[in-house]
Length: 389
Image (tube, rainbow, N blue to C red; front, side):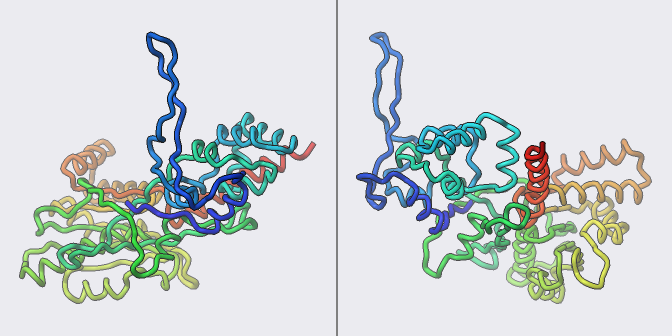
């Protein structure tokens, strides 16, 4: 898990829209919340430090501790309405806060971060303490570790796709992924705050002789680089010869985006990986291909390694791809094993029970643009229909 920083431009922009009368944005403050407690003597009030925010400067809190990129929810817009000096700003904010259809259309079309909201309603100048109290904490972003301690001790490698996209159907301002942009901009010797979270259901089998099948389009390849590094270390450093076959199905849009290409070629040459397959979905001059298409072409091999040899199957990437891969594997097992629908369902459940089907699934990926564009197009149509008599 990586604790990112919001971009400086956003933080500075938000600061310009606050009522900073008597407030130094670089001086440390403690945010306190007034809490009331019912006692036998009546209601007792006391100011207590905020549970999740440390004593820090306003600039640091907006940079490291608070989420200023997620579109504000309706209750936050209701708070902003109370800060609006212009009646028109107040009226529109209250409408967005109280009309779900209008709010959803506004949210999905512009996907506005806090600065864009404050720019849209310029008469809103919140007091810093009230703004901080209404913002939610900036959550850590999780990435699969893309290296093996056996080969890279005292190091953590990440494979990260830098996310950026335009809002409003591709005509709006550029938005940037919080953590991917932060990591892309980190300089040598900068301190990065992170922690390691275990993934007990996603690791190499204890029996190293078992074959493993890896499916990871895009940055879904990240944990598999750690897998092949570990098996490479077993062969080279420990002299281990009884290492099962490793097969990788990787997919990307263009051949130029074939991540870790040289690394994979080396692993094949060293005998660490038996085969690697590359699916290209947007390469000019060749048919559109996805990892599940390549799986169908290797149906007999997959069935033998997984069912007959007791291998392990791993899939890493976004949830839509993972569902397609699962259904493709189910079809392969059913066809190659001459199973009924009930038999293949039971077999897939057995795979999970035996911890031989492993998933590392994430929701925000390089498909973020594609997913958001669908929502924005629906929002654009709704807004157009509402504006027509």
